[in-house]
Image (cartoon, rainbow, N blue to C red; front, side, top):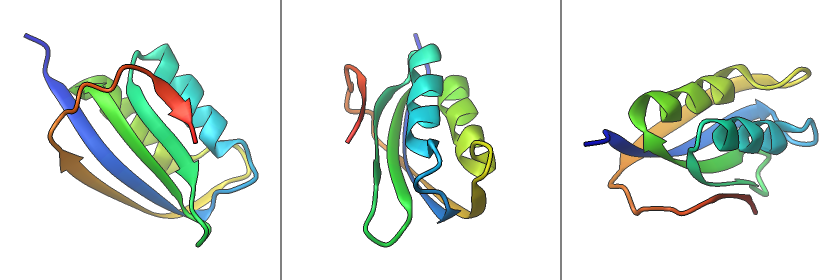
Length: 91
């Protein structure tokens, strides 16, 4: 049986307006990770990632590094029970 994991991620720093959400979406889609990503009004990015544990944490790794031009100053990752998300979307 698949080791399904769900995490709720908050990324702080210079992370908006740099293609960060698209980079997360592209990586998640490539790895068949489901969930969503959005900008928050306080300048952070929020994401929910669900799928095979190793693939979810590959996307978390991208959140920690960010795309070119991003400056990540903090990443909070909270585990949650899987909810069987069906797709990945940018909100």
